[in-house]
Length: 256
Image (cartoon, rainbow, N blue to C red; front, side, top):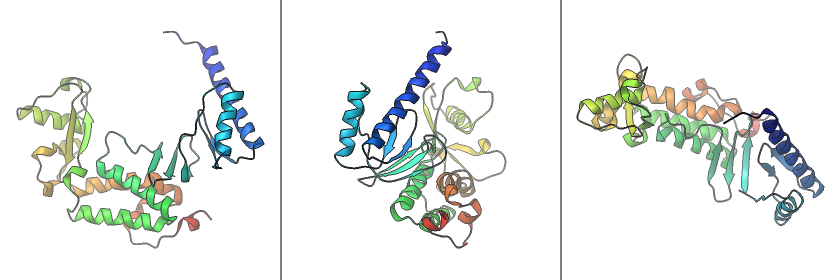
């Protein structure tokens, strides 16, 4: 396979020109363009007119286009392809915030989605902050079910070929030493337990762990707070705010 620089540049230029022309058509029809990137265009929805716009694009630019989703509210960042949308049926779309990164627990993913839902659904950042604080308290009190704390990661090579012992590799080796069978492609579920030393040294297969031995500090520091801050930091919220009882404000206060 050979790299063709001129071809790559031509594709990029064509895509840019197509988006630019689509924006021009939208504006000529009286539609408000909110955001556009490589392959998508966000416009303020107008029933009937949006459908007509899609048909016109298909006709004039000879390319298939459709209305993908309709959001009640959407929050954009300055970064390309990084936004959160609240759909008509109350669902949450999180794009570009790594909500489903492989080394995050189900709890972290749940927190990020709920923070987004609270902010877009209520316009109240303070409610999102209180929600995160309540999760922290429940973690410290041992009230979070262990299944929400399990981190799943895939074994991609033979265990002896890993140069560094990552948490899931250590957990896999423990499983192997206790009679388990590990193959490339297997997903290893592990939790982090209390103790000293590196995080990888405290990774254990969740099937061998008593819930009371799970380290709440790890989950607060490396799962809960980071997952929440990926969205809340855009509203001026800091890690210190999430850990303290300081006064918080509404979404509109943060946008002043």
